Image (cartoon, rainbow, N blue to C red; front, top):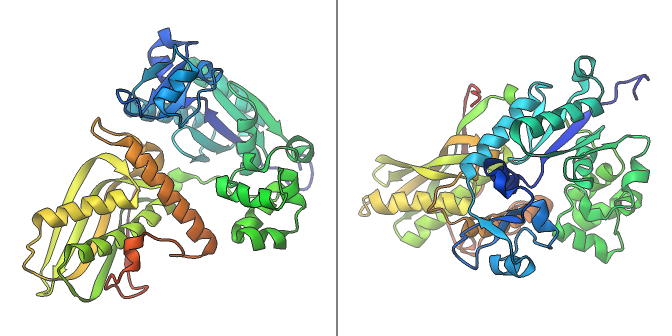
Amino acid sequence: MRGGSFTERSILHCDLNNFYASVETALNPELKGKPVAVCGKAEDRHGIVLAKSEAAKKYGVKTGDVIWQAKNKCRDLIVLEPHFDEYVKYGKAARRIYYDFTDMIEPFGMDECWLDVTASEKLFGSDREIAYKIKERVKKELGITLSVGVSFNKTFAKLGSDMKKPDAITVIRRSEFKEKIWNLPACDMLWVGRSTYKTLKRYGILTIGDIAKTPVDTLVSLLGKNGELLWKCANGYENSKVSDFLSTPEIKSVGRGITLVSDITENDEIYRVILSLSHEVSRELRKHRLSAGGVQISVKSNELKSVQFQKKTNFLTQNAREISDLAFSLFDERYDRELPVRAISVRAFDLLESDCAVQLDMFFDIEKHIKREKIEKAMLSINEKYGKNTVKEATLFCDTKMPKGKTDCILLPKSKVMG
């Protein structure tokens, strides 16, 4: 409570509006005010909309629309291919502005960040004044707009930035959050995904207020431990810290290795082991919000001879399938197949924060990547709720010759370097 026995935290959530489309407009001002959609495989009518401008939104164009559907909604739609390297640059430029006000910054994707400005108010004014200064600087220096949510915790700050767009500030104080947000749909709140919302709707839990008023034990029975988290969020009890990622030692690589219970020689057996290890590596990368620009596979034969093969990629990834495909291709191309395999490890290296994970080359199949990410995130969500390996890829139900719970995790730290 401000002026009371404790200092209320001041948390901002900054969301760069229609990010990809806004960057394209900043790079080409002639597009300003026109309906623009950034799409994967623009030459392919079956490509999908990755982002759209405010003008395109007015025609009902939505992210995920197939290009032909979007053009049916808006005949004058301007379809652009993505320039991910530019999006990365603009995301970093926005963060440099944020750092002029606080060093407590937690990225949430390339275009969103939480900022803890509690200690900054003596220097720069109230949290709302700081939000305004940041918003105007981003607009002036980068040519794109920003929506800012201001609140006492991360959940409500994020909700605030979603409530009014574009180029807006929404403040949600502790004294007024029930009035402002309890009537909003439950799916508007962070952590309430499509599957969770369907479950809540089946039991008549339709709004954020409904979540808040439902006994926590009931929510836990419906949603597992995520139910307790949602109850805390809806009631304003969520108090997680804004991670100061600059002070966290950077991880140089993430690896998983295993010695098998028996030697293997067949491709399908070897691929299953690599895929299983890659899922472990992927979980660690996601945990630390990192993506890899290279993959290494180490193989020990039954003669205890070890070899290593590695390859840098033209894209960044934290996806298990992409990691396993790269690792297996290295094995398949270079390993002496006359030697049975005794042990395997998979390592991801050249790591960067995950907000850079979409800097792709022209040959990268972004639609395949998006589909894989949707599947993998759905699996992770279910396993987070019900326990590890509740859901996994069908091929991993076969015998992998891996001793249960025996994989070794390898994290190699290094000092943090800002780019």
